[in-house]
Length: 167
Picture 1: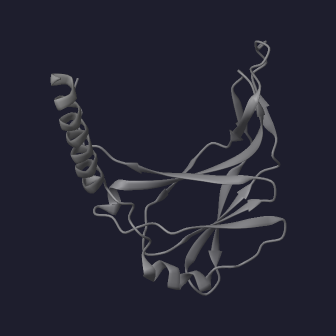
Picture 2: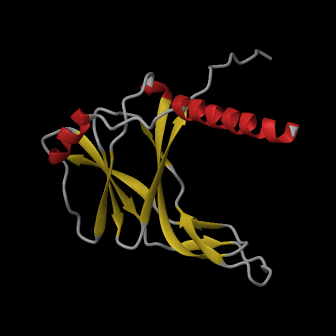
Picture 3: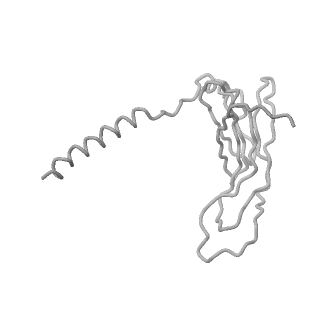
């Protein structure tokens, strides 16, 4: 009989805890509307490339953050480590002083040559070395990537500065 009384109490406690956690969860920040308005200055096409647009939300202390661009190519992978050729080239928007980025890559994939166990193949990606950019929510980040490739990005945040000891 005691187990029957406790079950509704446990369920209601779990429901309340879940509601509180979801209310406290950080909502994704929305893109800066001013950045969207500036998008018209950027080129819309580049032959043999797809255009990607990243609109970053305004954040406090943007100078402590960096945006990393990573070029990708979908492929079947196994236990070997992979990397892909390529680098992001900075180009200017004529007459505006804005910058956009173009991934220069032939899509060549480098890999280790370990013998992998049977059945280790799975869908995955090869990726270029990342390029760090200044975090700037005031302008969109426009990136052109060759057809057949993709773009991933992430935001890095600096930790507290440390004093270096003298020796």
